[in-house]
Length: 106
Image (cartoon, rainbow, N blue to C red; front, top):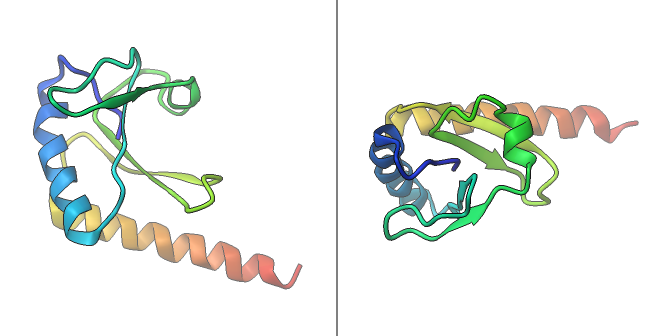
């Protein structure tokens, strides 16, 4: 999740994202441009990847990364509900699985 310490939207959405991550046992990593911790949550510094994905640095942004770390999908930009996060993740997984199935025979 891409966040900014001074962003009130990031503060609100982080609690929603944490709830979803705990409920569905997802690993949630917080990323900031400067590596500054997000409240009491440790962040990692953006290596430039998120700058390329989000050049305007609009936050918060929640991404889903496949287990190999090769595919990154935006799940949410701004604040959305827990149900909408789950719905977006299911849509992404269906799309990802179709890509894997269609590439299987090649």
